Image 1 (cartoon, rainbow, N blue to C red):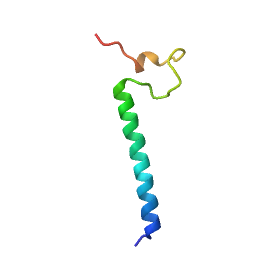
Image 2 (image 1 turned 90 degrees about the vertical axis):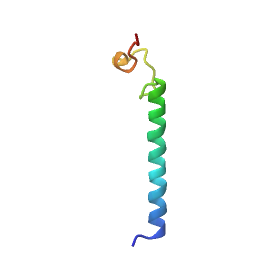
Image 3 (image 1 turned 45 degrees about the horizontal axis):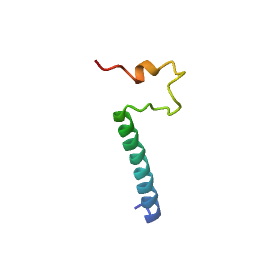
Image 4 (image 1 turned 60 degrees about the vertical axis):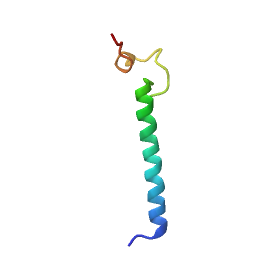
Length: 53
């Protein structure tokens, strides 16, 4: 049986990972890039920001 401290640490890590995943999904839905360093000189900007017709 794992100790209470191990369970608490595991729960905190799971919450942090879930928060990161949720924030990345929300940012992606808004159209924000994944690298957060700007798109002016990025070679992959066409794949991140496709034009909608």
